[in-house]
Picture 1 (cartoon, rainbow, N blue to C red):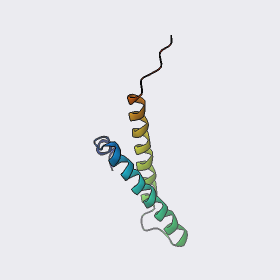
Picture 2: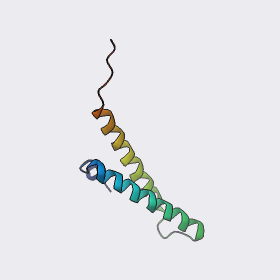
Picture 3: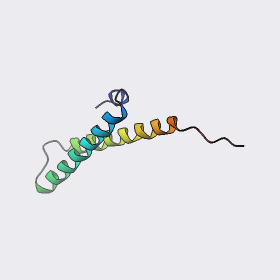
Length: 71
């Protein structure tokens, strides 16, 4: 999933997508323990997507919170 696609999602959609990616990564790790994966690059793709979603959520949190003033 492209980062631009993630930016267009709402917060609820991002949370849902994050959950789905984490579950998919878990399944891939279990599958890797039992047998050789057909596409080992899928693990990297899932981890990258999770990181991108968490980064986007953090950015949105920081922009929604007012910065503390140095008074």
